[in-house]
Length: 346
Image 1: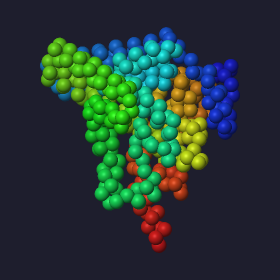
Image 2: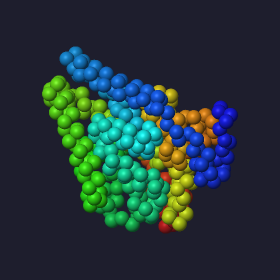
Image 3: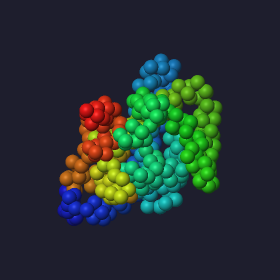
Image 4: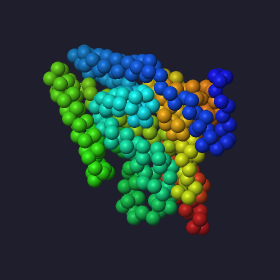
């Protein structure tokens, strides 16, 4: 433990806790460069290795798609750090590294940075537009929908859609236009179209080098798998039974950041490949802490380990939780919501 670190009373105001965590906000240039290097080089090596094994059998090459997708997810997490201005001290360095990675992750960086900031600003607030997150209705909202819209919501929340079709649509199609920001000025269009142009240039170059079919056979499974992993991670960060949602009158940024975000306590290798994004409650409370310094916070202040803690097994159970019950103040399943309604009707 760092004896120089201030003692944090997690039962105190989360606002005071955020101030105490300020000392972890400073990025370390050498560490940032190392983190970037040990992500980019293995990703490129695995891509080349997968391409090189195509002649030996496609199923063999697909084995390399799994770790390659993991490193692509890790690149996205570095891009995520850049969007918060936490990976480098220089804003220009953060933005240009983020934009470059955005070409690989098919994500218009500046637009995504804007929408993600809106997510942080209103996360857990039931009365604000739920931008940049998983759409979640309250039990009351769901019951007030027409039958067709209820069916559509059930379809949207089905795991095959949420973690299969949805991520593919989001990263390959939805990110190609500034959907939801069409009339928000020039920035969404510039970010989206410049990213599209860079993607087109990169894809054209790679097809020229390796051919259309080999490129698709390598890149598509990596992209599809990484997209699903990324959406899954984003899902479990806020979709768990003991999360916190409030109406505007009772909502506070600091309390909802700490108690409405999970600590996804993954095994070491998975924690590393996801760049510690599972320490999400600390991240939401103080988003300027570099991802590689988040474990320092848990090391120096171990009481924070237990807030919103989810194991890998527990996270799988959260898939059935689809509605926020304002009376019970927890996420519930469709069956639980139906059962509660039946009990009240008796």
